[in-house]
Image (tube, rainbow, N blue to C red):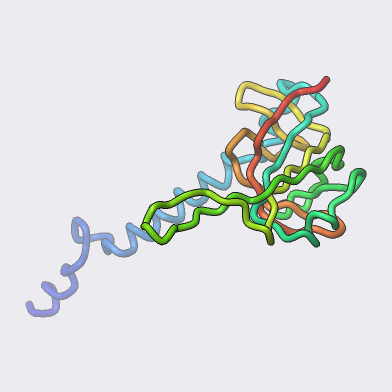
Length: 167
């Protein structure tokens, strides 16, 4: 009799162990997610239009050596996917504004002499669809979104400032 009660403990309806049921549900949901996920490029397919996208990325704070390393014509890559997303068309820098606490306790913004705010403007192939603009058909870009950028002489994280469809 003691054997019978210990066998039923932890069983659901006396047949299936609860832990086994949780594992089975997890595996089924994982399989369904893998079956239905698909690739963004495949999902958009013919519904997306091929366009040229001009975008600007704000990188801050950067030192003068980083600013001097980025040149027009450099290729830009999405460091997360490894795909080329465009070519640098313009680079500009403004003084990086840092918050400084004064002796009286007030906080003001003041230019930092060692750092710059770098704006990198680039153009690249993209697609437009109802979900937005995709760089190289796979990277959703919108103002305020972050991106890990890489080029021949740059590896950093920036924020999209502007995104415009050129053609």
